[in-house]
Image (tube, rainbow, N blue to C red; front, side, top):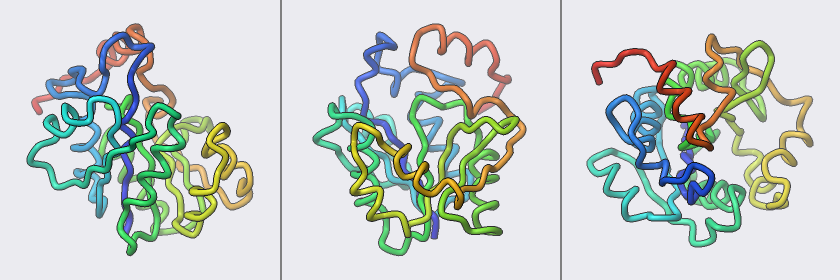
Length: 199
């Protein structure tokens, strides 16, 4: 079993508006991310909420997911990762970390990382483009205790650096994995490069 944690707890201060609910390809950011994860064939999707949790929950109504609220979301992303790790199924063999500000990442990318891990299990698998690391990041649940114990000021970088020799880069045919939407100009960029969709 492979689970996914979608980090959707932030306040979007740099964006100037709540990006979880900003529209992209006719759906909200958070709905795009969840739908792409579900379409990848992953076994479980856990969405970590924080700021405006009720609004995010409403935006995802009807989808077969789990939601968990991070009461300490203002302390940063690490707290949301830990919250998600605690919420995934006890049967999960690995967990894929996805970001709500990357609605442009397709189901095919998620599927590529998942299938690569299943074919060659490693402690860490990271999507890459031209050898540049991006997201998503897939973590074997053997790292669970290390993730829960990581220094919040360092975050996942601490775990990744510790196991750099047990890390596999999964090359994907898109640079979409290399950037997220933090600023209004980032939003304009992904809309300019988004393909036409009938979704």
